[in-house]
Image (tube, rainbow, N blue to C red; front, side, top):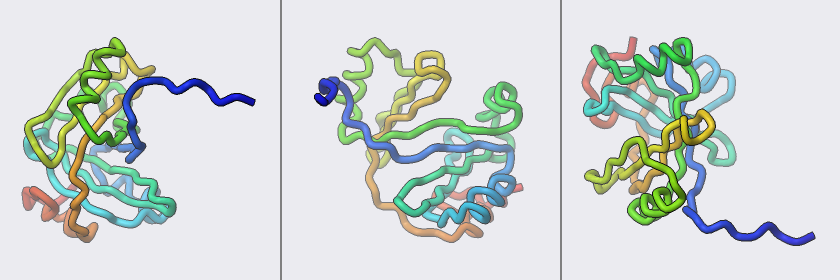
Length: 167
């Protein structure tokens, strides 16, 4: 049996699936308690308007849990479309986001958003209309996350924390 031909493109590596809900606390019974996800890191993105934390599972698989910050409209359209919560995006990591952006465009895709200003986290998104219904995040990141307790993130004291506890 012969191997399939190499397809030129982006050398992306799966990183995580993100689940969004109005409250992270509503996601914890399954992803943390039942399935045994181990807390990795988390914090608030005040620029965009959400709190997130990542759980890791045996084999290094990760799930990110997300909720809107108070007063944020970031997830409004998503919650209206998906019925209150569900899979928000799939993240794949790349070594060179600028080369990835060129490859994405050369392949005929139009990035929905591109953020290249932060040297620690540079990303682009492919819209679900172009990817069979899934928001795809391609990111180049510096992997220097500090461990933090779940209770600290939920209390609003994670990376970039607002100090406002999760509902």
